[in-house]
Amino acid sequence: MRREVSSAPTRRAVIGAAAASVLARPALGGTPPRVVVIGAGFGGATAARCLAAGGVDVTLVEAAERYVACTGSNAVVVGLRGIDAQTFGYEALGRAGLRFVRATATGVDATARRVSLGDGTALPYDRLILSPGIDLRFDAIPGYDAQAIEAMPHAWKAGEQTVRLARQLDAMPEGGTVVLSAPANPYRCPPGPYERASLIAHFLKTRKPRAKLVLLDAKDTFSKQKLFEAAWKTRYPDVIEYVPLAAGGAVTEVDPAGMVVRTDFAEYKADVACIIPPQRAGRIAAQAGCADRSGWCPIDPVTFESRLVPGIHVIGDAAIAGAMPKSAFSANSQGKVCAQAVTDLLAGREPESPKLINTCWSLVAPGHGISIAGVFHPADGLLADVPGAGGISPLDAPEDVQAREAAYGESWYRTITRDVFG
Amino acid sequence: MRTPLPGLALLAALTTAAGAVETRPPPGASSCTGCHAEGAAMGALAGRPEAEIVGALDAFRSGTRPATIMNRIAKGFDAGESQAIAAWFAAQAPR
Image 1 (cartoon, chains in turn brown, orange):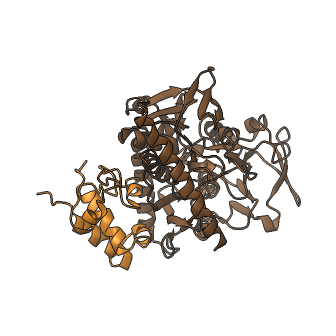
Image 2 (image 1 turned 180 degrees about the vertical axis):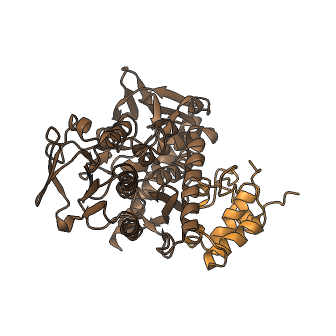
């Protein structure tokens, strides 16, 4: 109860302040309110497009030349599709009624409400939306630094890393060992490591006879666990060895030169090692003062406005979105809701309490899909599950249902990428 | 023939203090288009009759319509919320 009482006045105060500052502008004959969005992934590009569609003056800042989507990239790791199917240009965004600025955002002055860019220029804003995704933590596992990713790719930011892991798997000897490590919560794409384990196991079974996969996990429970474990038992009983935290699954050190992965209990010699390290919000979030000690960004569940810095909203993987997982679907849902809330705040009206949906499909084998879904709403100052909704696919789903789930997942991927980048 | 915005949608079309007519999507609606689009396996919602969408959500919720995932999602919305979402999509031009 205490949290409810303390959070409500904060939000009203923020809304009141926003309404006053924005409404004052036209009266003074100033420029219309300006929104800057940093990060053109599933969250930021969605928010920028929605704002532009609503007639808001919006500038989208992105450092990369093109976007390489993580969602679906496990299929690239095992050669089921090419990296081109994950890669999207930003040309269409430049024609979507917004200003697309190809630059690195190097800093945020939240008092002056200004974003500084790598070329020395600055962008003033009335409201700023951060959608910076994740940074990998190279200070978390001894030995796993920025150079180690060549020998032991994370492939958790899609692109060169994804292709590198695919090549290493392709080149590994028959009867070899793959070591895959999953981090503790929270991290990008909760079911992702387990889909990756499933698809690598399928690859090994069909292409690398007698090869094994050791999955080292820094936790004991994970997304869609029953579904994955059922699939592993029936499909890959002699391929996957799962080591949860309780059995010593937390990686304590890696030696990239020797291709050795260590835990408190054992040492694993790998032919291929994929280390998915702990993560934090993308760098600009901390620079703007929006990240807390966890490295992630606490937000208001109605507006996605930072709990730490007024005037800045945080969406996507970087945000602490309560029960909502860090997924492309979540980021897209959040981008739309946040854009509406920012539009409301700029117009001086109170945003409605939203509902958001997330769905994540995973493949347990090519053509065999499983899913988790959720509906979320603000409760006690956080985004919480709507009771009674959501959950995972049935354990006893027949083959044709798994085939349909795989097809739906693929269809969603085409829709969402066209929606955001097309 | 396009039916005009019925019952609940009219209630939702509140006038704000600034005098602007309410044009915001009802809670939940903006998430639907993540999947439901023209050409998608899930089918588009824009321009579908309100009663059809309400009926589908109701059937998914009660389990009378087979589903892979909509049975889990529909349970997150009550009858009033479903009606508002249905009216929102019914009022849009098909695309």
